[in-house]
Length: 239
Image 1 (tube, helix red, strand yellow):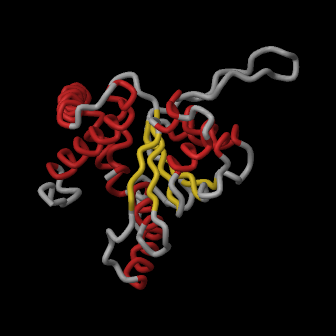
Image 2 (cartoon, one colour):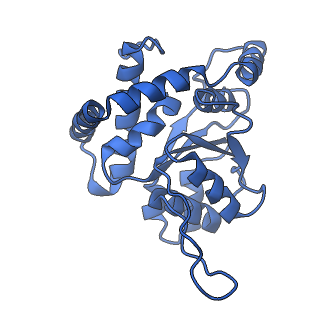
C-alpha cells in the first residue's frame, strides 16, 4: 500500500518525506518483492529504484526530486554508516536538496522538491543502527518508519520469484488510473487525509516528535480506503 500512499503525503500538511524501512534478519521474507510491488504501481520497479552507493548522494536526491510525489526506493542500505544514514533520513524529511555553490561561488539553481515516501529494505534495523551510534540520533530515528518482515510471509520462493518477474513485465497501469482520480478529487482527499491523520494521532497517542510515523500510518490507511473504493486493492483491515 505504500505505493498508493506516497502521493497522499502532500494532502497531510507540510510534511516532505519519510524513510520507510522493511527489515528482517533473514532473506526470503518478501521485503524486496513488497518494495518492488509498491513502486511498480507507476512503472518498472528496476528503473524507479537506486542503490545508495550508485553515484553520489546529490545524484540520488536529483532522482528523488524528479519523482516528486511518487514513491522512490533505495536498495542496499543494510551496511550504511550511522552518520550517512542520519544525514539521509534528515534530508529526506526536508523535501529538497541543501543549497550548493556553483563554480563561480554563487548558489546553484534550486532543485526539484519532493513530497513522498522513500522505501528501503534490508537485514539490519536502521533505527538500531542509529541508536547504537550514541551520537544523539533521536530526531533522525523518528524520521524512519520501520516494518518488521520476520515470519510475516507464507510465500514460497518460487511464488515470490514469479511475482518479482511479473512486476518487470506488468507495471504502471494502476498508477495512471489512480493519478487521474487524485487529480480530480484533490479537495475531498485533503479533507479525508486530514481526518485520518487526526484519528491516527489520537488512537496511538502520538507525540509531536512522532509525527512522521503518523504521516506514514495515515497515508497508508487513506490509501487503503481509496484503492478499495476504486477496486484496485483488496485488504482485510480487520486482520
